[in-house]
Amino acid sequence: MSGAGPEDLTDLLGRLARRDPDAVGVIDAGVGPVSWGELWRRTLGLAHELEAAGIGPGDCVAVWLPNWSDSLCWQFASALRGAHVIGVNTRYNVDEVAHVLDFARPALVAVADGFHGLDLSGRLREATQRAGVAPAIAMVAGSGREPADAAPEPAPPDDPDRLAVAFTTSGSTGRPKLAAHSASGVLTHALAGADAIGLTDTDVMLCAIPLAGTFGFSTAMAALAGGTALLLEPVFDADTVLDDMARHRVSHVVAGDDMVLRLERAWRRRPRDLTSWRWWGGADFQGRLRELASWAADEFGTVTSGVYGSSEIFALASMWPPDTPAPRRWDAGGRVVTPRIEVKVADPDTGEPLPHGAEGELLFRGPNVVDAYLGATATKAITEDGWFRSGDLGVLVEEGVFVYVCRMGDALRLRGFLVDPAEIELRLAAHDAVDTAKVVGIPRADGGTVAIGFVVAVPGAAPTPGELRDWCARSLAAFKVPDAVHVVERMPTTSGTNGTKIRTATLREWALRGTTG
Image 1 (tube, one colour):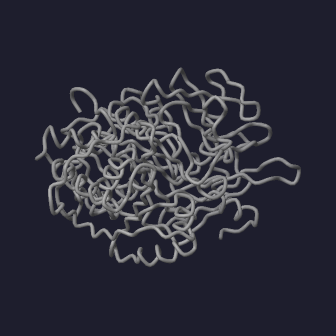
Image 2 (cartoon, rainbow, N blue to C red):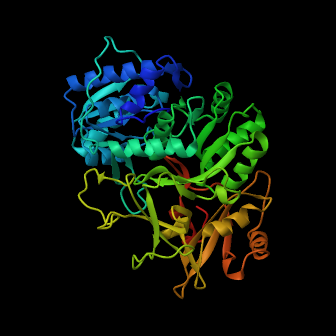
Image 3 (tube, rainbow, N blue to C red):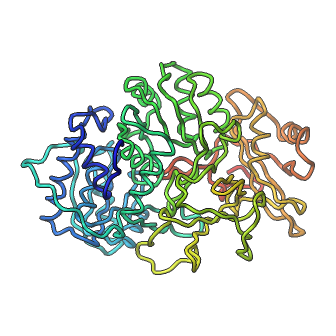
């Protein structure tokens, strides 16, 4: 946005409507465009309905909706009432929903009615029984109806530190937590993200990742802060998304390599004009980002920047500036999006800060750091002086700039050396017969660790384990060569709110059993 920045969280949307009410702000894929003015009127009408329903400061509203413009209305209408939103992924099963309800204790649940043939209301009934909660239910049809009567614009709550949104964490260390952020934190991060990406009111951002998670939410908020139109895709079908990207001249994409891989394969089957696609903020969930970044650059001139974030510090907490040379620009990490975010690397055991260039745990402090965990009173992830311990290994390149290495639990200690499994995975994936590769570590009989590789072959290929080990040995140090390589039909994956990731825990189980499933 040009001029003075928004005064509060809801002003991200309200001032767009006041400045240019007829401009297209959101494109509901398969439905049509929504102007900023219409989106704001719907938000005000919903805020009026929430007030009538008794929703007020401190209340939680669970939003179980796909990427509809209604999802944005629920976020901002709840903020106008001083309430906070917990997003719920439409893929969640009954147990996952019950866990969210148990910890968030929402006063109201907005649930999609008849979306994609899913019986979400049935799941919700069962989940409320298991969680022992009885929230009010609002069925949302996704029609984007205008309010029956024009609603007055309420004064926003005067507490910028009130909670505004919460996300489920990955749950890598137990049951997922619900990381909540303040309204001021959301606003600050949205403005910083828009500035770091360079978004303007002539751009179009693809929003195909669920808004219920930090990756999709942070993308949408940054786009709003830049006055950028949002193309919302409620269901990810690669061919449909490509058609929409070409039709609406999408300029920016934030997505994991899992999603872009599906776009690349669909594009090769039927090319479209994607020359408007200027920037991709990419996450390397499946080890394919570098090859896909090369494809996008060669075909469309797209600049790809690796990004970094989490539910606790927001997605897009850092990214590489576009003038950073490749392939460094494709690494996860980059420069923090605002100097108000501090980052340091510390010894995982002692907590002592490490110098630039040394590998250790990444810690963050600033307005982006989680303010509370819903349903929990304390966490060891936050130090006494406010640093969030990410559980990620990284290297500080210079002040405010870092490279993410891997999760601390995924790092391999091979023959006394700390090895990033991605180094071995990239070598395996470079083989002509390999489509996807993943490497995990399992204990040796003497207490050490050995690397075990898993690969999915390209269609029609049949690489042998011995061939792949020999391939690794040609360029890797001997201690990095996997003790075994298993060729599997498919990788075990989990489809989370932020993308599809390979389940390394399952691969470790397979490796320990010496099986492939």
